[in-house]
Image (cartoon, rainbow, N blue to C red; front, side, top):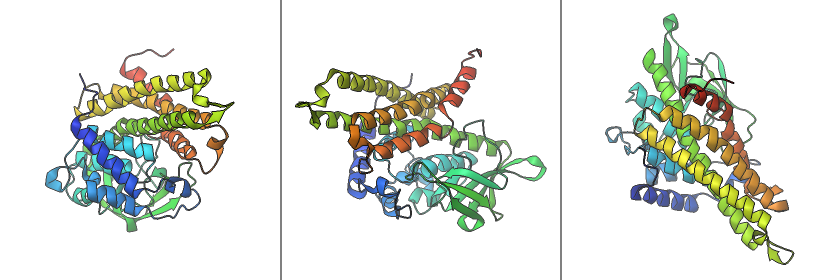
Length: 356
């Protein structure tokens, strides 16, 4: 059975990531990106990749990485989710890196592990394991592409054989498109060069599926961290906001809503930890765990952000409040790597639940 508890190593990693974010990430930066989308956030990624080695968390030591696993990556994503940090950890250090690892690549991984370069898997951000098509022409919306250096494109080679090809920045055209969440902006990617083949045939398909599965499993942890921030921030606000000469947190209606949200997040934490744990253990039930985690945590994060917005009252609707950045990330994540409805449909098939 998968252990859902955090180890001392994971808690130490959490502390390091949180303290680095507190030092390097201006709390108001996520909100400013909506007015100043060209703001350079590279220093934050270099702090996380260079000082903590997060870029190579999943990469073997022989290729310059840390050789950790999905449980550690999940803890990192909880902290990045809390801060809605505008860094490419999920898209590059998890999804693209997993694709290269499964493809047996040794050429590109060292540069990714050092944080010198970032990569992106060029598929629509809604793609999920077993539900994607080979790229032909332009692809959108792609998350993590605007600042990426390496583009991994699932395409079709000679004779219709599946192929995973790598393209440098000069081999593609990247155009920003309208994004709800500016901390993870979307883009349209058009391949213009030749690139080089990373894997072909079944291995290419397996690499892409593994990358999307890892992304879905660990996205749940990002959603969990975001939801926990919403709950904690709202509880603190309810303690200090006074109405009718009493803190609003003393009103029964507020207490009940916060208690219900806490119970929801306890379940979300269990689902997210199970998904990360089964992925780390290569458990036969990992597909079930991933479907459960995405079906549950996606909605839980949106619910937490909506409750935070409402329970902050009028201030929650203002641009200066930080709640709106979490709501936008939660809503964007709800559509990422498969919607909750898609994952519920996948789950029904996995557990042999007949259609109604």
